Amino acid sequence: MTRTGGFQDDDFWTAFHDFLFSGERERHADELLDSSPLLAFAPGSRVLDLCCGPGLFTVPLARRGHTVTGVDLSPAMLERARKRSADAGAPVTYVRADAREYTAPGRFDVVLNLFTSFGYFEDPADNAQVLRTMYDCLAPGGTLVLDLAGKELLARKVTPPKVVRRGDDLMVQTDTVLDDWARLRSDWVLVRGDHVTRATLVWFVYSAVELRAMAEETGFEQVEIHGGFDARPYDENADRLILRARRGR
Image (cartoon, rainbow, N blue to C red; front, side, top):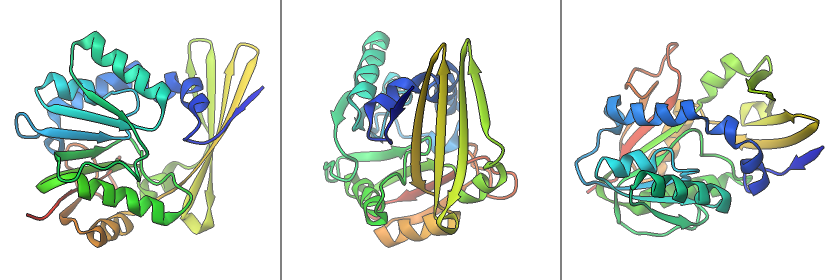
Protein backbone atom coordinates (compact mmCIF):
# COMPACT_ATOMS: atom_id res chain seq x y z
CA MET A 1 0.00 0.00 0.00
CA THR A 2 1.14 3.54 -0.79
CA ARG A 3 -0.13 6.68 0.92
CA THR A 4 0.26 10.06 -0.76
CA GLY A 5 -0.09 13.52 0.73
CA GLY A 6 -2.36 16.36 -0.25
CA PHE A 7 -2.60 18.57 -3.30
CA GLN A 8 1.04 19.67 -3.07
CA ASP A 9 2.26 16.06 -3.36
CA ASP A 10 3.25 15.16 -6.93
CA ASP A 11 2.72 11.47 -6.15
CA PHE A 12 -0.99 12.19 -5.70
CA TRP A 13 -1.34 13.81 -9.11
CA THR A 14 0.62 11.04 -10.78
CA ALA A 15 -1.27 8.20 -9.11
CA PHE A 16 -4.77 9.60 -9.67
CA HIS A 17 -4.15 11.42 -12.96
CA ASP A 18 -6.24 9.13 -15.14
CA PHE A 19 -9.28 9.56 -12.90
CA LEU A 20 -8.91 13.30 -12.42
CA PHE A 21 -8.04 14.19 -16.02
CA SER A 22 -9.70 11.60 -18.21
CA GLY A 23 -10.04 11.77 -21.95
CA GLU A 24 -13.71 12.61 -21.45
CA ARG A 25 -12.77 15.64 -19.35
CA GLU A 26 -10.31 16.79 -22.02
CA ARG A 27 -13.01 16.60 -24.69
CA HIS A 28 -15.43 18.36 -22.37
CA ALA A 29 -13.00 21.27 -21.89
CA ASP A 30 -12.70 21.68 -25.65
CA GLU A 31 -16.49 21.58 -26.08
CA LEU A 32 -17.01 24.18 -23.35
CA LEU A 33 -14.77 26.66 -25.14
CA ASP A 34 -16.98 26.28 -28.20
CA SER A 35 -20.31 26.52 -26.39
CA SER A 36 -20.03 28.46 -23.13
CA PRO A 37 -20.95 32.15 -23.10
CA LEU A 38 -18.82 32.46 -19.95
CA LEU A 39 -15.72 31.32 -21.85
CA ALA A 40 -16.23 33.47 -24.95
CA PHE A 41 -13.30 35.87 -24.94
CA ALA A 42 -12.21 38.55 -27.39
CA PRO A 43 -9.89 37.28 -30.15
CA GLY A 44 -6.26 37.25 -29.13
CA SER A 45 -6.96 37.65 -25.41
CA ARG A 46 -4.11 37.23 -22.96
CA VAL A 47 -5.28 34.36 -20.75
CA LEU A 48 -3.87 33.09 -17.46
CA ASP A 49 -4.95 29.57 -16.47
CA LEU A 50 -4.06 29.55 -12.77
CA CYS A 51 -3.69 25.98 -11.45
CA CYS A 52 -3.66 24.72 -15.02
CA GLY A 53 -2.90 21.08 -14.21
CA PRO A 54 -2.03 19.07 -17.33
CA GLY A 55 -3.24 21.79 -19.69
CA LEU A 56 -6.78 20.68 -20.47
CA PHE A 57 -7.80 24.30 -21.15
CA THR A 58 -4.46 25.87 -22.07
CA VAL A 59 -4.07 23.88 -25.27
CA PRO A 60 -7.53 24.50 -26.78
CA LEU A 61 -7.32 28.15 -25.77
CA ALA A 62 -4.00 28.51 -27.58
CA ARG A 63 -5.40 26.71 -30.62
CA ARG A 64 -8.13 29.35 -30.73
CA GLY A 65 -5.53 32.10 -31.05
CA HIS A 66 -5.28 33.33 -27.47
CA THR A 67 -1.96 34.10 -25.81
CA VAL A 68 -1.98 31.62 -22.94
CA THR A 69 0.05 31.20 -19.76
CA GLY A 70 -0.46 28.16 -17.55
CA VAL A 71 0.68 28.28 -13.92
CA ASP A 72 0.85 25.28 -11.62
CA LEU A 73 2.93 24.10 -8.68
CA SER A 74 3.20 20.47 -9.76
CA PRO A 75 6.22 19.55 -11.93
CA ALA A 76 4.46 16.36 -13.03
CA MET A 77 1.38 18.24 -14.22
CA LEU A 78 3.45 20.86 -16.01
CA GLU A 79 5.43 18.15 -17.78
CA ARG A 80 2.17 16.64 -19.06
CA ALA A 81 0.90 20.10 -20.06
CA ARG A 82 4.06 20.89 -22.01
CA LYS A 83 3.83 17.56 -23.84
CA ARG A 84 0.16 18.16 -24.65
CA SER A 85 1.02 21.59 -26.03
CA ALA A 86 3.93 20.27 -28.08
CA ASP A 87 1.85 17.42 -29.51
CA ALA A 88 -0.89 19.88 -30.50
CA GLY A 89 1.50 22.48 -31.89
CA ALA A 90 -0.12 25.00 -29.55
CA PRO A 91 2.30 27.57 -28.07
CA VAL A 92 1.71 28.04 -24.32
CA THR A 93 3.97 29.58 -21.69
CA TYR A 94 4.12 27.41 -18.57
CA VAL A 95 5.34 28.62 -15.21
CA ARG A 96 5.90 26.62 -12.04
CA ALA A 97 4.69 28.80 -9.17
CA ASP A 98 2.60 28.84 -6.04
CA ALA A 99 -0.77 30.44 -6.76
CA ARG A 100 -0.34 32.70 -3.74
CA GLU A 101 2.95 34.07 -4.99
CA TYR A 102 2.73 34.26 -8.78
CA THR A 103 3.08 37.86 -9.92
CA ALA A 104 2.30 39.39 -13.30
CA PRO A 105 0.62 42.71 -12.50
CA GLY A 106 -1.98 43.76 -15.06
CA ARG A 107 -0.70 41.36 -17.69
CA PHE A 108 -3.85 39.40 -18.55
CA ASP A 109 -7.26 40.09 -20.04
CA VAL A 110 -8.68 36.87 -18.57
CA VAL A 111 -7.85 34.78 -15.52
CA LEU A 112 -9.28 31.26 -15.24
CA ASN A 113 -9.38 28.98 -12.22
CA LEU A 114 -11.33 25.88 -13.16
CA PHE A 115 -12.44 22.41 -12.04
CA THR A 116 -12.48 23.21 -8.28
CA SER A 117 -8.87 24.34 -8.00
CA PHE A 118 -9.61 26.88 -5.26
CA GLY A 119 -9.67 26.57 -1.47
CA TYR A 120 -6.95 24.02 -0.78
CA PHE A 121 -4.73 26.01 1.55
CA GLU A 122 -5.07 25.30 5.27
CA ASP A 123 -5.15 28.98 6.24
CA PRO A 124 -8.23 30.84 4.91
CA ALA A 125 -6.03 33.91 4.48
CA ASP A 126 -3.98 32.00 1.91
CA ASN A 127 -7.09 31.24 -0.14
CA ALA A 128 -7.99 34.93 -0.01
CA GLN A 129 -4.46 35.67 -1.23
CA VAL A 130 -5.05 33.48 -4.29
CA LEU A 131 -8.02 35.70 -5.15
CA ARG A 132 -5.78 38.73 -4.79
CA THR A 133 -3.29 37.09 -7.16
CA MET A 134 -6.06 36.73 -9.72
CA TYR A 135 -7.11 40.35 -9.27
CA ASP A 136 -3.57 41.70 -9.49
CA CYS A 137 -2.83 39.71 -12.66
CA LEU A 138 -5.80 41.20 -14.51
CA ALA A 139 -5.55 44.29 -16.62
CA PRO A 140 -8.15 46.98 -15.84
CA GLY A 141 -11.48 45.73 -17.17
CA GLY A 142 -10.22 42.13 -17.26
CA THR A 143 -12.40 39.12 -16.49
CA LEU A 144 -12.12 36.39 -13.86
CA VAL A 145 -13.88 33.04 -14.29
CA LEU A 146 -13.70 30.86 -11.18
CA ASP A 147 -15.38 27.44 -11.31
CA LEU A 148 -15.87 25.10 -8.37
CA ALA A 149 -18.23 22.68 -6.68
CA GLY A 150 -20.36 24.93 -4.50
CA LYS A 151 -21.27 24.05 -0.95
CA GLU A 152 -24.96 23.84 -1.90
CA LEU A 153 -24.17 21.31 -4.64
CA LEU A 154 -21.87 19.22 -2.47
CA ALA A 155 -24.59 18.93 0.16
CA ARG A 156 -26.69 17.01 -2.39
CA LYS A 157 -24.06 14.41 -3.18
CA VAL A 158 -21.54 14.15 -0.37
CA THR A 159 -22.80 10.59 0.28
CA PRO A 160 -22.66 7.76 -0.66
CA PRO A 161 -19.03 7.07 -1.64
CA LYS A 162 -18.20 7.60 -5.31
CA VAL A 163 -16.92 4.53 -7.14
CA VAL A 164 -15.26 4.84 -10.56
CA ARG A 165 -13.76 2.03 -12.64
CA ARG A 166 -11.36 2.55 -15.53
CA GLY A 167 -10.37 -0.71 -17.13
CA ASP A 168 -9.06 -2.91 -14.35
CA ASP A 169 -8.44 0.04 -11.99
CA LEU A 170 -10.93 0.98 -9.29
CA MET A 171 -11.13 4.30 -7.42
CA VAL A 172 -13.31 4.98 -4.38
CA GLN A 173 -13.81 8.52 -3.04
CA THR A 174 -15.41 9.09 0.35
CA ASP A 175 -16.25 12.62 1.49
CA THR A 176 -16.64 13.84 5.07
CA VAL A 177 -17.98 17.22 6.16
CA LEU A 178 -15.74 19.12 8.60
CA ASP A 179 -16.10 22.22 10.77
CA ASP A 180 -19.82 22.84 10.26
CA TRP A 181 -19.48 22.76 6.48
CA ALA A 182 -16.44 25.04 6.38
CA ARG A 183 -14.30 22.28 4.89
CA LEU A 184 -14.56 18.88 3.23
CA ARG A 185 -12.23 15.91 3.50
CA SER A 186 -11.97 13.47 0.61
CA ASP A 187 -10.38 10.09 1.19
CA TRP A 188 -9.29 8.40 -2.01
CA VAL A 189 -8.47 4.72 -2.51
CA LEU A 190 -7.05 3.49 -5.82
CA VAL A 191 -6.85 -0.24 -6.45
CA ARG A 192 -4.55 -1.13 -9.33
CA GLY A 193 -3.91 -4.86 -9.48
CA ASP A 194 -2.44 -5.87 -6.13
CA HIS A 195 -1.37 -2.32 -5.32
CA VAL A 196 -3.49 0.05 -3.22
CA THR A 197 -2.85 3.80 -3.06
CA ARG A 198 -4.54 5.98 -0.46
CA ALA A 199 -4.70 9.77 -0.36
CA THR A 200 -6.51 12.45 1.60
CA LEU A 201 -7.41 15.98 0.50
CA VAL A 202 -8.93 18.62 2.76
CA TRP A 203 -10.21 21.89 1.35
CA PHE A 204 -12.48 24.82 2.12
CA VAL A 205 -15.89 24.79 0.46
CA TYR A 206 -17.84 27.92 -0.37
CA SER A 207 -21.45 28.86 -0.88
CA ALA A 208 -22.40 31.34 -3.56
CA VAL A 209 -22.92 34.05 -0.94
CA GLU A 210 -19.50 33.40 0.65
CA LEU A 211 -17.66 33.35 -2.67
CA ARG A 212 -19.33 36.56 -3.85
CA ALA A 213 -18.39 38.30 -0.60
CA MET A 214 -14.75 37.20 -0.95
CA ALA A 215 -14.59 38.45 -4.53
CA GLU A 216 -16.12 41.81 -3.67
CA GLU A 217 -13.82 42.21 -0.67
CA THR A 218 -10.86 41.59 -2.99
CA GLY A 219 -12.04 44.47 -5.18
CA PHE A 220 -13.82 42.69 -8.03
CA GLU A 221 -16.79 44.42 -9.64
CA GLN A 222 -19.80 43.21 -11.65
CA VAL A 223 -19.71 39.92 -9.74
CA GLU A 224 -22.03 37.32 -11.27
CA ILE A 225 -22.90 33.85 -10.01
CA HIS A 226 -23.91 31.11 -12.46
CA GLY A 227 -24.98 27.50 -12.03
CA GLY A 228 -23.21 26.10 -15.07
CA PHE A 229 -21.05 27.00 -18.04
CA ASP A 230 -24.23 27.64 -20.01
CA ALA A 231 -24.80 30.64 -17.69
CA ARG A 232 -27.89 29.10 -16.08
CA PRO A 233 -29.01 30.54 -12.71
CA TYR A 234 -27.45 29.23 -9.53
CA ASP A 235 -30.53 27.45 -8.23
CA GLU A 236 -31.83 23.92 -7.65
CA ASN A 237 -30.85 23.01 -11.22
CA ALA A 238 -27.23 24.17 -10.95
CA ASP A 239 -24.41 21.70 -11.56
CA ARG A 240 -21.46 24.03 -10.84
CA LEU A 241 -20.80 27.25 -8.95
CA ILE A 242 -19.21 29.65 -11.42
CA LEU A 243 -18.23 33.18 -10.48
CA ARG A 244 -17.53 35.70 -13.21
CA ALA A 245 -16.28 39.14 -12.23
CA ARG A 246 -14.28 42.06 -13.56
CA ARG A 247 -11.44 44.19 -12.36
CA GLY A 248 -12.47 47.83 -12.42
CA ARG A 249 -11.02 50.20 -14.99
